[in-house]
Image: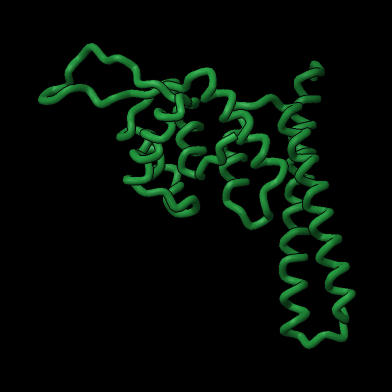
Length: 190
């Protein structure tokens, strides 16, 4: 499988969400949602990403009949079946196993509507195991290096990532809880 960039991942999501859309409309959406700040996505990367996705066969240009004012209509893209399959795979991967400080996880969260609740919960549970494993490894390393006897600056280098991982794990656990409650809530007539 080709690894895809954050930009390509985001573009697949936005095209899926809009059914079909142009580079210009995507640029407006990126600005509106503030992706530029946290996912580091600029205009040139949007157009470059659209070309790559098109070359890989994950999106296809829609034929446009009309003209708009002076020039031809901007090219609008929609996802191919392969593109939708790739998007789902990326969402599940990003939710289940990205590092705790990786904004790819945020891109996965933004795309939750494109996968089923059960798939989301399973991926997030996988992430929880992944984070717990990372936390345990970091704690073992900390202890084996001397633990509380280490100088403060060295201790901090261990304790900071451990606290980030644990905070992330707490966040993921509450997200799972909320997804499960949502599912149960619909099953009953209250």
